[in-house]
Image 1 (cartoon, one colour):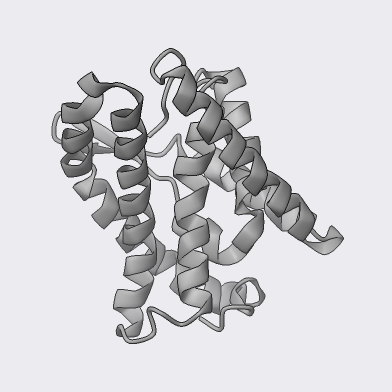
Image 2 (cartoon, one colour):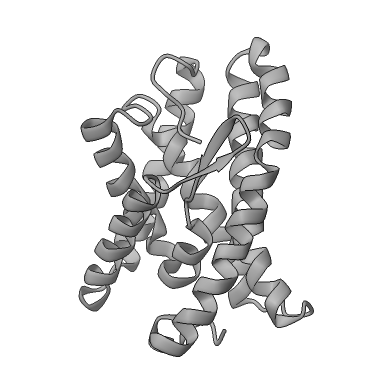
Length: 200
């Protein structure tokens, strides 16, 4: 879901960069000394997750785990994603620097939205396993929608690609949901303090 340099219009680049900068500053305001280590660890996990590719027919999808990051980090997810994406762009050539603001928004904002939904118990009507699955599924779904929207707003010729991106990422949404389900169950047993705030 990384947008490379040279894809977006200057208006979209500027707009998404300003929005993402605001959210990163919001992250910094919410960053406490005791949470620096976990933000760093989650940033590293997001960075590493992009190397885990799952073959799917003629293509491959890779994990993002932004649902898990969202419920663990809350507002500081923007800082963690920024660090990881900056390293990916400079060291690996994933994404780009001019599109960094757009990529941070696409990846981090869905995780923050899920954090708000879980914190305010919006998903509590769901059975617990479906709830955990939906945390992973919905974050990738929202990230895909934001990606398609940003592309469509950038150039008219990307409109058709935006529709295909949504359908192409449905398997990724399902796989992400299943992995998130197992990860949350594991964290509840092994590291329950990470999920203490949201009472999962």
